[in-house]
Image (tube, rainbow over all chains, first blue to last red; front, side, top):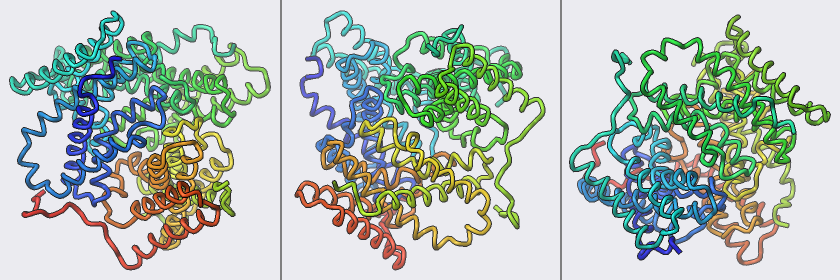
Length: 213
Length: 213
Length: 213
């Protein structure tokens, strides 16, 4: 079964942990209280998967029912709660881990959609939503415009490409744990290379004149 | 079957397209990147229907599984992405198309609820939520207070009246494609007349003294 | 059956009513129109329960299908719409009623989760989400950062403790209406005592140096 990626549970736990770090950090910056900080960690680490599960009817979602994932998210929140002065300086590591989480969440999400019998296109959507949904929820809950929609970095686009590749492999009947892991690596590489070489997604097409807003 | 409105698929596609235009325009105004602009188009064009489908248990929702509707939303987003300098001047046409989308989404949503065996009241809710949900999602994702809640134009109220009429017709056993189409026309007319004569919904009741906030 | 709390329907109606008052008041303060004010009342009074129902698969959620609860939410909204100048001065009463609603929603939500066969942990989540979800939705729809995440009052924490107690009692097989009612009273008492003695949840751990943001 494709979902049985080598090291998949281990990788998913890392993804949730990193997502929780990013959420809890957003809560720290907004001076939330301890409950708010841990909630943000939970929402950012597990929100994408919860959105996926609600959309494909896999309820209750793992974000409230899988104790290992919930414990991981809380642990990530607690680590950031106590050690944020140091962790803020380790930004580069967090960005790398976040790229790994994006890659893994996307592939796991798309595969879970396919295994639930969704169409290929729906699987692509749930893959991308799993990858970026936690960050969107984090931003909405801290009163920010979701960064994935406007930051112009290549973030969702590598996820989208990876999810499409997964769907194509599945349709072709050649999906395998190895293939899935290769897609994880590919999304991660695209994300990291885009950061390294500052590749940007374009803003609104300028047209014949500047929009002026 | 009442859902078989004459020209219904055609009309729904128009609704999704217009919703996507409005969402993508909001993304353009916020200087989102191309992924953000297309995402906003998708959210605004299909968000109401996705909310409806999650609430009635029709998962995965059409917004991620019906390729015609998804393609339509992406097309609307792309059109706005490339042609926003011109389309912004065609505001009157977009307002009219939006009134049509509101009318159609509301009726299609209420009927889909009834066909899923919801209560009459739940069908009214899902009808109105289908009609206004995409715009609410668009506003939340761009950091705005949902315009339908505060702009004082008659927007949701025509949808509410129309959804109630659909529920009453259904209960009376006289629902038909023709009746449904008449309700679509009625919502559209109410919306357009309210715009034309600037009928407004009242703000907070002033009471014995002004609220002062 | 544990859900048959003595006076439970009566108490739940009070919870919805108080939640609707708080939502409609937020709409009044933002100068929403009458539709927006009633929508906020509905969202705040019934949003927590709707979130719970979607997460456990109990669709359509009671927030759109139970006419008694919907009517109660609309009544709360209308009362605030007309009488907000007076009700704003009755803040102390509203805070007390709100503590009661929190307590009751949490217990009802956790029990409903358990009766739907969720895990103990998932039941704790849906209990807390039922208790605080309406307020979160109210805040998001009015463009505010959810107050429960940052106000540092003990609000969600009493709910969390109460939901855990419910889950433990259920697992131990000693859940009963009387026990559930005692937990309601306990959450209420914790919330009121925290207010009375201004007990606060801590903000971000200061660490070795101040965060500086």
